[in-house]
Image 1 (cartoon, chains in turn green, brown, purple, red):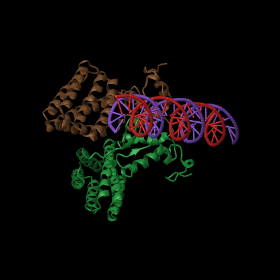
Image 2 (cartoon, rainbow over the protein chains, first blue to last red; image 1 turned 180 degrees about the vertical axis):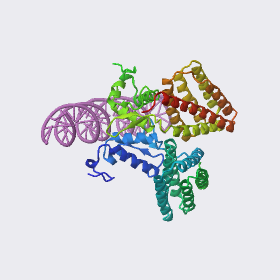
Image 3 (tube, rainbow over the protein chains, first blue to last red; image 1 turned 90 degrees about the vertical axis):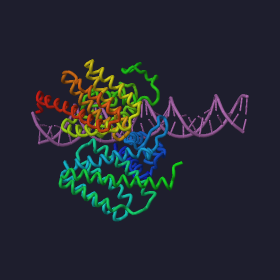
Image 4 (tube, chains in turn cyan, orange, green, red; image 1 turned 45 degrees about the vertical axis):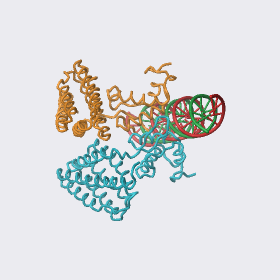
Amino acid sequence: MEDRDGNRPAERKRGSGVKRVYDILRDEILELALPPGSPVDEVQLAERFGMSRTPIREALVRLAGEGLVETLPNRSTMVSNIDVLNLNTFFDAITLMYRVTTRLAAENRSAADLDRIRALQATYAQTVAAQDALGMIAVNREFHAAIAKAGRNPYYHSLMVRLLDDGRRLLRLYYQSFDDRLPEQYVHEHEEIIDAIARRDVEAADRLARVHADQIVGQIQRLFATDNRQHPVL
Amino acid sequence: MEDRDGNRPAERKRGSGVKRVYDILRDEILELALPPGSPVDEVQLAERFGMSRTPIREALVRLAGEGLVETLPNRSTMVSNIDVLNLNTFFDAITLMYRVTTRLAAENRSAADLDRIRALQATYAQTVAAQDALGMIAVNREFHAAIAKAGRNPYYHSLMVRLLDDGRRLLRLYYQSFDDRLPEQYVHEHEEIIDAIARRDVEAADRLARVHADQIVGQIQRLFATDNRQHPVL
DNA sequence: TGCATATTATTTGTCGACATAAAATATGCG
DNA sequence: CGCATATTTTATGTCGACAAATAATATGCA
């Protein structure tokens, strides 16, 4: 008997259970396939993945550690809400992290880092050309995560990844409601950032990252401004 | 029958298990009672706390999420090492977070925040006067965590807490080896930071936080310099 | 009928046990 | 005697079940 993710119980290797559940749930949360606020039932997931509640629980604990789900004691865990009211703290933090990680990438990148970043940028350009909003959102996250990794500061990297994930949910919310054209200018800005990192120009990397961050923040802010006008909060 | 932490199984409330184990283990790791690299045995902990392995495992998963323990697949989990080689990334990040959180505290603090910060500073001064190194280390962490909280940016706050915890292990390592006098000047620097936050002087808060960070970084660097001289790495 | 209380139902937290993977030890062959 | 292989040991990953806490429902009284 196969579960709906296409793996027979017997085929699963010991220890792969939690990681699989964690990866799938994480992706579904970031893609908004599991919408914010929706309840997460352990037995339901256990049935779905064809396994016991124990590994499900471990995956949920890890997701809770990243703030992607929230657990009420003795009561249901639910997908974390996107806190629209505190968006400014998000904007503040992601702008700073864009700058710091890009700076450090210009300082510390290896040749291999640069290859990885360029490969992701190529994929990013393809998704934009294809008007593939979902792909673009996912690849954009990988692009900036790769830059953060090239900066070689694990503290900044982990915060950046968390911010990018939250941002991915925000953007997903955006392109779910509005189907306007994708911003081609981001591709160009990415290219400029790569150039600065390639020639180890720290100040240029900082400045370009700041501009890029302001662009993205501005776009999200405009989204919520129009969104508020169309769906006023009561 | 009582376990060695003084609680009978019957007295424990449902759901309090993981939190207790998590808190105690976390504290022991930060105090170096569990030294870096030491193995963490689940059944041993289960016996010690008088409970099953399940809640122990959940606590360990959460600690792993914070990077305090590392889990090898199918093999023992161990207390994370203090990465002396990558200290510069720590110094870089904590300096930036000192500045950012103190800035934001000056902007966003409430009166209640200020009270909490001042109370912690009073305790801090007491520990320094009493030459209580361990108490000083712990309260110092709480002091700066309270400032970060007053800044009201959860992203910065969580990173700051993580950095402070790593720093607490570093300092603990220091005052374990060397019993020289405790730095009174930190008390004064704290006072100046509080004043800046109280009068909402953002720029002064930033400048003072930077000086404070440089002091601490410099002290830890001197420690490791002397430590290397006395115990050369082979 | 409306509200307070009691009962049931559902879901989580914890448990003890089994299965499996890796390490430690023992065995056998050259 | 040394090394490759087999066996035992130890600790983890997973399971199914029970107990407790909360929500949902039913009951009783005014």
